[in-house]
Length: 137
Image (tube, rainbow, N blue to C red):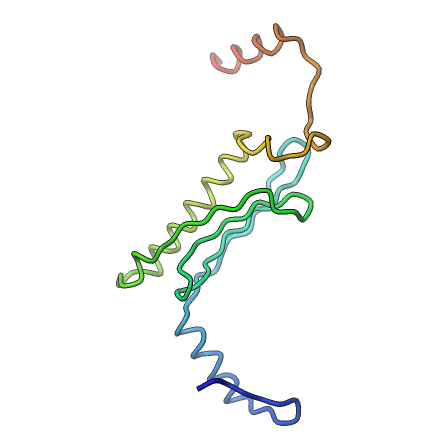
């Protein structure tokens, strides 16, 4: 039964019952939000559960309020699991941490516009030497 209320009649117990029913019927796991500084920019990574009606875990990477990357994974196969909440939390944390790791490794640099990339003037020899030094500490 859908919940209806007008601005003139508001029954808090009915509203709370409706909210509780919504929460339990479509349980969603609380998400993750992390800010990461990379190349002088602050990226915001947000991972959230879209709910059992749309069983997806979605991670978005923002830069200056714009979405640079979106990654989704379905957890429909977990809907009948008895420990579904724990498994969804683990999937969320894993996906969130993977995206952060990829960001730190520079895998999303190609998504940044050239005016936000910190490009250093180095010769090819300097770049090769720096690479070799980082590979063999």
